[in-house]
Image (tube, rainbow, N blue to C red; front, side, top):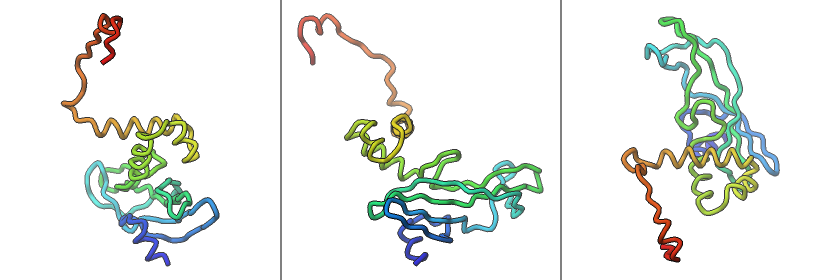
Amino acid sequence: MTIELEALLNLPEIEVTGIELTEQQFVVHCRSRFGEALCPNCLRPTKEVKKYYQRTIRDLPITGRDVYLDLEERQFSCPDCERYFSERFAFVEPNRTTTQRYEVDLCARCEKTAFAQGAVLENLAWPVVQAIYERQAARQVEPGDQVRWLGIDDIALRKGQNS
């Protein structure tokens, strides 16, 4: 069953260690497939784990149930540069509680509805939905596409020319 679930999740960096299923939620317990990580400072691989901690990450729903990844993350100690660092995953940004694909999907749905409605449907606070939308929208704007000048013809508006 876990092999099929791993294919369904399509997150090659993690392996599934357990599953909890309720009427509303689908909790997937998982951990990294890799035995080592690269130090972001000196770029050398290390296997020295200092500590483990759990991180809950929301993902796209499956069969109408909210999916949560209960991810076991590790903090490594680099023996070369003597620094500590947490492992990183490509599917979620550091200090975020949602996967990138969930954020993209939520952003696409918010383009068609109000933030408040999206928040109610996803059981999130609307400022969280708004922050996700603004973060995703900022990624879609090219640096040269930013507005530099904005002109408003207030005389034409007073004359009734609204176009």
